[in-house]
Amino acid sequence: MAFKKRKRRSRKEQPHDALFKAFFSDAQIAKNYLLHYTPASLHQHIDFSYFEKSNTAYVSGRFGVSFSDVVYETGLKTGGLARLLFLFEHKSYIPAFPIYLQLLDYLLQIWEDDIKNKRPLSLVIPIVVYHGKKGWEQVPFWDYFQGLPKTWARFIPHFDYLLTDLSSIPPQVIRDKRESEHLRNLFLALKFARDKNLLLENWNEILSFRLTDLSSDRDRILLQTLTLYAVNLYNMQPTDVQHLNATLPEPERDWIDQIPEIFGEKWKKRGLREGRREGRKLGIEEGRAEGRIKGREEGRQEGRQEGRQEGRQEASVAKDRAFTIKTLLAFPEWTNNEVAEFVGVTSEFVEQVRSELGNSK
Image (tube, rainbow, N blue to C red; front, side):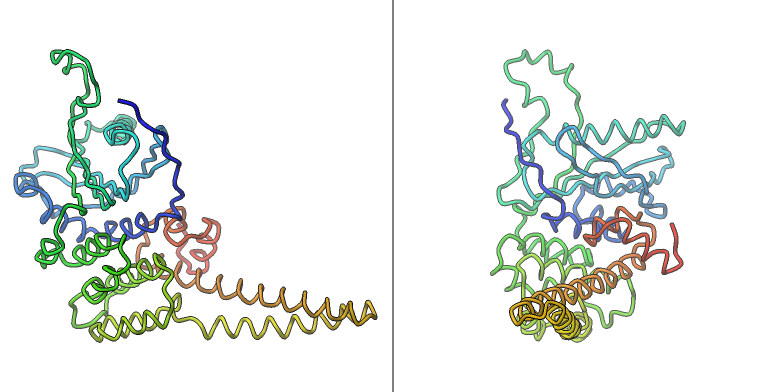
């Protein structure tokens, strides 16, 4: 079977990855997934009293650069296994190569880490959550090897993975899983992400957390992350968001109305005004130095342009810093690289903000 090369996608161009990682980094959401989207024959044996996110990151570079989204470590109720790992991998498109190759890459890295740390080999259950346009056809690895005698199948690596194909799950099935908590909001957002009209029609349901208040940092950061995902996905304007928010319950509406990344216009305008004043001053000084009317006008124009740019940059930095602080407070265990990837800034920027918070890592 021939496979076409797929152009490598920038993770910044794929906001779905950051959203998925933010939600599945929450242990309760990962538990809810296993309870509501995996067979009872699997989750009924898990000891959820011990369920922790692994801090080890695994990178697959052989088949296009990709990062394992989240890995959780747990055990069995019988105590029969010392280490049971759930590897969550998110896909917004069908890979050009068999997914088995990428998953096998992850498996080998995990087992190499076991050997390095002198542990018994871990049992790893790969999980793929997909929400692309086309349905995902899950076929055995053997099917990718054509023209071989069936008796040779024993020479092909044999392992399986769990698949949640949101493109084939009716929205009502997701809605009915009310006990799945915020996982319900995430899956509805991913389900409708490729159709702006459907996303807007279901705005109320996607962003309603069904809570009497939003007092916990965990709920607020997840709601803000989900809102920014929807807003940035279609470059929505603050007025559009305000109109849509009118239908939301009061806790969610009040919190979203305070998100500076959406409604920070007054800070942008202030930066622009200050930039213009500085630009005028610089333009006049340059114009006087040249002593010509033409030079003065050119100086003013250049000054205004530089002033506006500085104002926009200051507003942008302030916005990035605010979102970085919120992310650090909500996910203190994340590394600087993980936070930088999620927020869309450099790891040096995250390190500086973390140092200012007195939370060096």
